[in-house]
Length: 231
Image 1 (cartoon, rainbow, N blue to C red):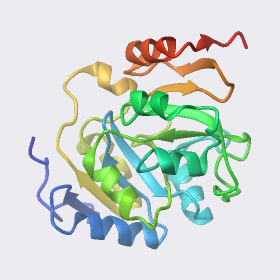
Image 2 (image 1 turned 90 degrees about the vertical axis):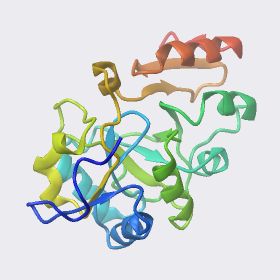
Image 3 (image 1 turned 90 degrees about the horizontal axis):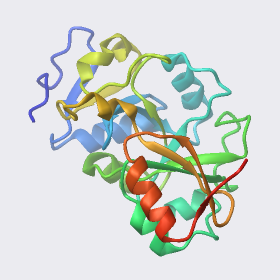
């Protein structure tokens, strides 16, 4: 699918760049380094991202989205090793994690001291962690100084998630850049975004959001002997 707009041809003057551009990753890193918010595709919907350990960037992310600061945002990392760095996952077997990720799933576990941003989810000790099955965002995570990205859907809080960059055009003036992969989903089901599962308690799971991958997530968890939490 071709991007909807040519690079840099946006009436709001926000940079719009095709994810396949040779300088897309460099531009994304530059935006993150200067504390800007970027929009980019994931394996579910378009997302808004920033440096998860930049206090000013996190505050701006909440402002741009119009999100209650007590509603947590997830982080995005490149691989299982990074997930273990930022989340307490000693009770989660590698075989389980590699059966679930990468993919349209957010795993909620206790955060570690490596997530030092006091403005990142201040009302909870837990953190949702994603490893999307989408090359551009994973390449960005891999080259962004091994740091996590804060990630939330690219829409105003309460509005439908976005499958095309034009669907959140009202946010463009407040973004450092928009990275366009064209239409990333054909069905309304895709707007459900990632499935969110709390795996903080050994041997138990709690579905926080059904999302697009509920059936396969439950199958994997049951295969590994996990039981639904009663709490």
